[in-house]
Length: 365
Image (cartoon, rainbow, N blue to C red; front, side, top):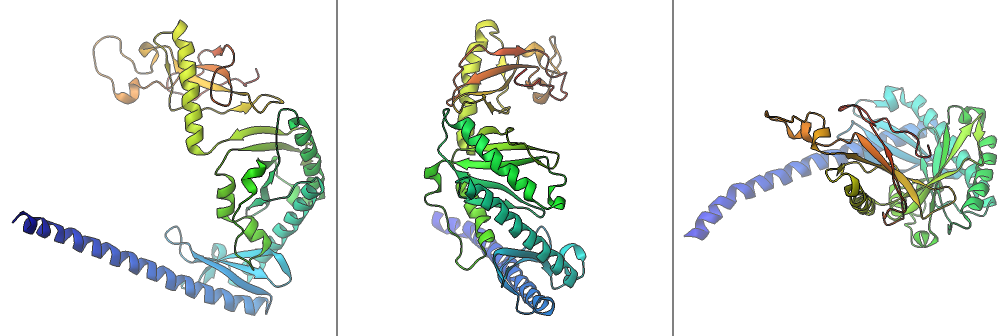
């Protein structure tokens, strides 16, 4: 009879599962219908404002973050540009609640400006010998181009200087409005083997849409790469300011941080047997100048239980939060790519007061 009782117990769960499935189908179905209505409205709008010039190539619902859909257009006379517009057919409104005709004109202007910047950026980098594999397109700019190059300690300075010169020419060729307010230009450098089998995107989509697809960007970021930041000053990139850093996928970075903490704890125990490294602090790491195999960063620690904020030496109780080591001291450590210490750490005392914010000095100080 046990199988009968088990079957009876399973019936409510089964009914609950069916109900959830039906609800999901209902919500999904409504989303599909809503997106179709938004797409139809966008096509009608495009024909009214730009007859025969725009073609819908994509539509995605904004639910549950917002109502309406994001519609993507290709331009008849520009195979590289795309236009994105938020449309809510049910509420008869578009981007930001603006009249739809005006919103479409503004969206097209942004799309054409992004395509012009893309061509300028791509042209300058190709002139330097680097193919642009991907970019990130924001509302106001084309950013973070991805290139590939074999990097080593021997060629690092030369590559950074050459890229800096290309980016300086790119920045000076931008329209004045596009140069205002920028503080840096970032470029990502992948290893050559990382770009051999990238997703190509849908044929017929605008070039810039394919080059900025989330699948492509995720594929490039799925392995180690180097991100280089160039300062922007007086309306242009400073060519000699390139500062590279090593970027790892999440799991690889966690493994690296664990190795750093292990080697640092081993060093600390020689003079501070009670010391505790703050495991939750992963640190900000920078490559040593001219080196790709040496990194410097901070490791936080507490000398012992008595140094924890909220610690009571006699009697009473304390909460786990009050007893948790946040790190009131820091070590500046230099490590290899595996997280092993390479020299004696530098101690920085009292980098945090109580449970307040960190006050870390510059790494090269």
